[in-house]
Length: 217
Image 1 (cartoon, helix red, strand yellow):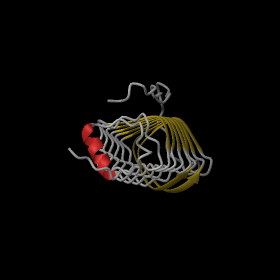
Image 2 (spheres, helix red, strand yellow):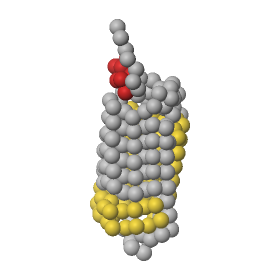
Image 3 (tube, helix red, strand yellow):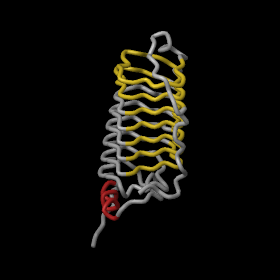
Image 4 (cartoon, helix red, strand yellow):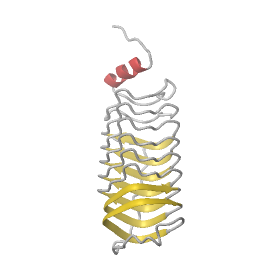
């Protein structure tokens, strides 16, 4: 279960009613702005932008293909049933964001700042989360095999019922994180990284082998 000491993650602050809006090429440009609306059932393709801003936006059933969103600003945003595979979000900011039941296979979140963000039921295998700056972030029921969280900063972050097989986390302090509901077989860590983390007895044996420790009866 989620660590009871984790502070509550603040949900996106969205108006009770949002009108559907259309993606327009004139706004899909550097420093473009999308404000207060629902974007759904469409394809977002072949776009390269910097400093694009989404505020009070709900994405539903949107496919992002061959998209680069460098330094994106997402505030009060929800992604539902979207395909964000291989999207480049490097150096972006996500504040009060939910990513629900979505694919983020191979997506690049390197050097992204995450504040009050939930990933729930997402396929995030092979995703890049290097050099993350995380505060108030949760991964729930996610596939994170072979993803990369190296050299990241974690504060009030949790992983619940998620698959972290062969995930790389070296250089990231995992103190205070409870992994007991997750599969961490083959996780890449250093001894100093896992100091203060909570694991099950079976997980401890697996980690001992990974860290070169011999356990004898």
